Image 1 (cartoon, rainbow, N blue to C red):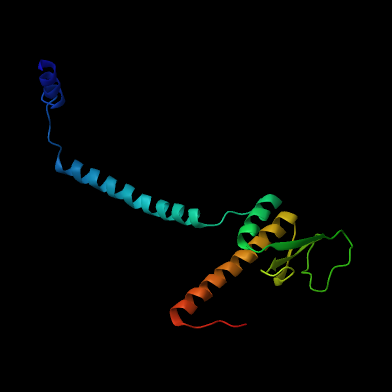
Image 2 (cartoon, rainbow, N blue to C red):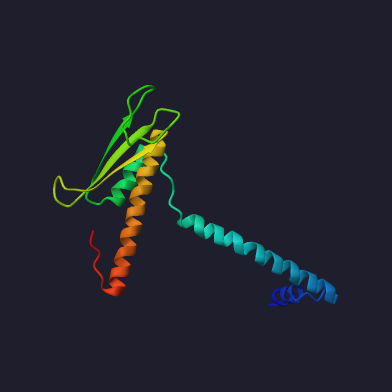
Length: 159
């Protein structure tokens, strides 16, 4: 019991004493705390936005995974690499290096049903895969917007 009383006395701060801080120090400390809080706000906003931003695909395995999630009934892609001097299709964009063409299809619920067919051009295979994923993510975002507007206003979208 005596040791508990001595710990209470030690923890009370009686031995160390206390000096009241001048008002300007309190004001300066408050301003520093306020500045740190203000500095944390943009950091928190950046981190929140960064967490929501979709991660880029780095290889064909990530592209397989992401497209599998974005196309629930399946998808198919055809990749064409053009060499120097190879004849390009008429709709190929002008490029200094041989381009990469990636044509992809989103499959429907019925076997063999193709819902969407798209073609993207890029300088590298990795860039073509990223553009395919970005293209499909854009489609999903538009579909979600159309669905929410239709639910709010009772409108059906037609092609």
